Length: 304
Image (cartoon, rainbow, N blue to C red):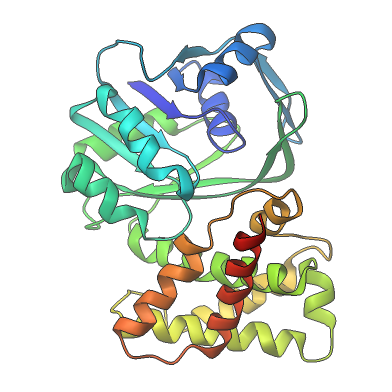
């Protein structure tokens, strides 16, 4: 199976690298500047699960090649439309797109660009970043990529994908309920990024402050209410499950959005909190806490 990874950053670089380590046929679609760095230094992964350095197969958007079988679509939401245009020359009628973006809002755009049947479900849980040398730094044992057919049905293509993604140092997991999994992660990442950016603090001090844990729960409940009203297939017990996960997080754990704000970078507020507020409006659900969270993000974006 010929696999194309969109980008070679913290997510694409890590999961693509683990597939290369397994000797899968992996190519990375990158910008010219990133290509030059990788050609000079190789793709370097510093990981608690074992370091890896290799010379990756690279292409840019202007290169010519046959369509790929599978695309790991791992861009940030604010680069989504640009990434779609860059990817189109490398997608054929049988190419499968596996998106790894946070949230849900990207799915209609991907399906419009490539067709409903070519986009499957996907998400990932991982703590990675790029250091100043452009190396992928993987800072915990968490490296879970979940994928599956949106209609819950098994298929020949999902079995081939499963075979290609199996037996690596990363955790690739086939799900029979990927759509629900994506909504559940959407709820978690929206609240986690929302409270840490609003409070400008890691999850520990927020969780342990007077009223902090109650605030987190109420934001989860508000988000779950919006999702249920919009017809999302979420578990009735998801708030309790997410609160258990919040309690398990390390004291100094920050959301990636919070780290981006600390660096003065672009953020995915419109794609996450903004889209959920849009669903709230369409479903006539009041969302006062989420509105405050999103207003904070809009003020940040005004100042960047």
